Image 1 (tube, helix red, strand yellow):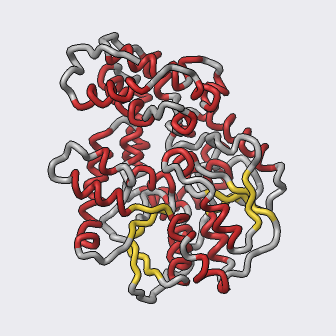
Image 2 (spheres, one colour; image 1 turned 90 degrees about the vertical axis):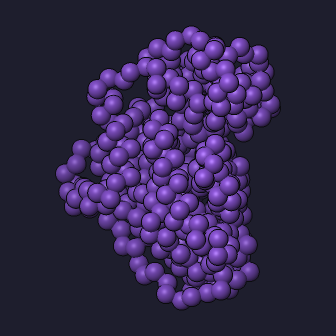
Amino acid sequence: MQTHLSPEFQGTAEGAEAEAILRKCVHCGFCTATCPTYQVLGDELDGPRGRIYLMKLVLEGEEPTRKTQLHLDRCLTCRNCESTCPSGVDYGRLVDIGRGIVERKVPRKPSDRALRWSLKEGLTSALFDPAMKVGQAVRGMLPERLREKVPARQDAGRWPTATHPRKVLMLAGCVQPAMMPNINSATARVLDAAGIQSIIAKEAGCCGAVKFHLNDQEGGRAHMRANIDAWWPYVERGEVEAIVMNASGCGVTVRDYGHFLQHDAQYAEKARRIGELTRDLSEIVSGLVPQLRDKVRPRDGVFAYHPPCTLQHGQKLRGGVEQTMSALGFQVRVSVNESHLCCGSAGTYSVLHPDIAHTLRDRKLEHLKVLEPQAILSANIGCIQHLQGGTGTPVRHWVEVLDEALA
C-alpha cells in the first residue's frame, strides 16, 4: 500500500515506521475474518483493514475526529489479525503509532479522561493492593459489574526458601499480587521443585503495558526503564538464565522492550538484552518435564484451556501449555471453535468497552462449556478474572493446577 506522508510526519521516527508497515499491506481483508470487533459490530471501520485506512488518512494529513478515535479505541490489540495476515503487517505497532497521534489531536471528554487517568494511575499504584483488600471485604455488596472485577480473597501459600544454582527473575506485576497472589508463589514452587530459584526484584513493577495502551506512552516507557534498572544488576552479573513471565500480557510487552526503547540511547541496548532473556513460563516448564514427571500426581477430569491472545498472537507461542500439561498427565483440551479469538478482557478494555467485552466473554464461555471441564485454565490474569465473571466453573492459572499436583 502506497502512502504519502504529510510534512508533519516526514522525517520522524513514527512516520518512517508507519510508512514501512503500510508498505507491506495489500488490503486483502483476510484479517477481517478473524477480528473480534468486526465480528461483533459488523463495521468495516471496526476491523483491521478499516482502521489501517483511517490511520493512513491521518498520516497523509487528514485531521482525525472523535469517530476516528473511537474506532481505534475499540480495537482490542489482540493481534489476531497479525496471525492471519499473509503479508506480515505489524498491525500492533501501527495501531500504537496511530493511537498516539490521534490522542494528541483529538481531545477527550472530561469523564473519559478521568476514567482513563484512574485506570492508568490506580492499577499501577501502591494503593491498588489496599484498595483491592477493601473491595474483597465488601465484595458481596458490590454491583454485579464491579463485583466481577474483584476476585475472592486468595491465600498465596508459602514461598520456597531453598537456593539453587539455576536462577530466574520473575516479574510480580502490578495487579497480580493483589488480585491472585497464589499465581506467583505457585510459579516459584513449581520451579523450585525442578531445581530453579525464582527471584523478584522489589523495585520492578508494572511492565508498562497499562499506561502505554491507554496512550500514556511515555508513562509506559518510564515503567519499562524502571524494570530494566531493577533487573540489570542480575543480568550484568550473569546470575539469572531468564526473566520468566507468568502473565502473558506482561510477557508480550517485556519481550518488546527493545522496540519500545529503540530510540533511547541510554536504554536501547539494555532493553534489547532484557527482551532476549524474557521467556513465558510455559517455555521454561516445557523443558522441565523430565524433572517434574515423577513429582506430579495429576487430577482426573478434563481441563479446558483458553490461550490468551498475548500468548498465541502477540508472542506467537501456540500449544506449549497444552503439550506440557498433557506430558505431565493432565487432560487439557482447547475448544475446537474460535480458540483463536479474544475473550474480551484485553487489559483495561473490559472496563472501557464492557458491552463488547461481555459479548466476547459469553461467546468464549459457550465454546468452553462444551468440553464439560472441571476447571477452565488460562495464562493471563486479565483473561482469568474476566472469564470467571461469567461462569460458576473455576477459572485458574494453569501453573496453580500443576502446583497442587506436586507430590
